[in-house]
Image (cartoon, helix red, strand yellow):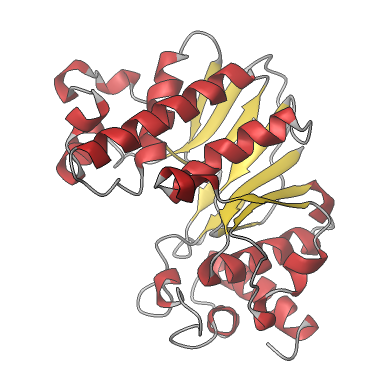
Length: 283
């Protein structure tokens, strides 16, 4: 099984990748983690958060395609297509966000063609429409039956998906971005996620759709799933958006994670952070 991450270099992404790589190292499976990193020119790494990134075997740098197109999250689709064309990922892979760590590997399934994904019951057309007018996406809420909307969120396990799916996803994502810019709007940060749900819906019947709420958990959970996704943080102790810029604001994010353990998921994350700090005492 290969695990794939698309990232655009920034201070926040850098410390997140350091933590993610450390979690894979703790299981002895860091060679299964492939990171496509979008950079502008020569990478300008933060010295205190770069040891894992600099030494990671499967780190592939590429141009910041998303910035050239006016929306950096487009790098996700570009990097997947590039990795498939490069032979880095082929029949089966897991797509991960940068703000998560691994607790245990996913089981390999025998289905010929499937996408298994973590669902978000709040990512509905009705609620999306309150954030951004779905007319920008040529979507009509009343024409989307709830049973035919994937609710796909963060972690995706693909097997035997053709590159055509991802090429179509890229074209659709760019179209959605262009429509918003044309209407003098800043593209919504979850535009690619909308496009992915639309494409998954279109491919129903061509693959097995395996929806689950047991691939990830958040820091508030006392049940630890395969991945701990700390996107929503843990109030009032930790929020990833406290640590966006260089110099890192509000202290050292890895130290804060290391010194707190209010839940089982947070405790495991804390252990990974402690392991990282022990190996990198100057952080």
